[in-house]
Image (cartoon, rainbow, N blue to C red):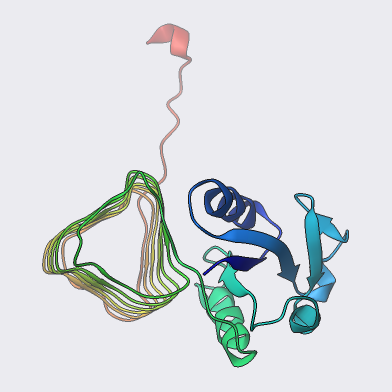
Length: 217
């Protein structure tokens, strides 16, 4: 694609910048965010411009875009900025780490991020605007819908369906053949063994602090 503008000026955008700069054929030319989020006119040494004015500074004819936002508002903020940028005429970059192991028949949408040491097995379909962070595993014949976020270490077994806007937390596990309904949150460390209906939330019990010090163990 060549020149890319990154939407974001937080940690996710910083990670995206270094990955795109150091491990892809893309060149990041600048950043953009909503006007109320701008505190300086540069980010990481590159121009930072108002999203409402971005096309005046970086033409969609000469630049693609990458929306570098996490799972805020159950992934809907990222999805909304993706939609708006598309309406402005931007195409989108996707990033697949050179340290990922990805089957050659992967069907991958646009504005996707596949992190380091991710494994994607054969016959997997991943929609648009999906993030699979480092150390993730996506089993064979799995379908991941648009605007999903799989945090670091998430494990998805074979023939799983994850519907749009869903979030899998750090080290969450989904059993083979399970369907995760639209907009679900499968929290950190959860092992999901059955289908989850739309917008259901699954969380593990927090760690318990014992009434003794480490010197007593």
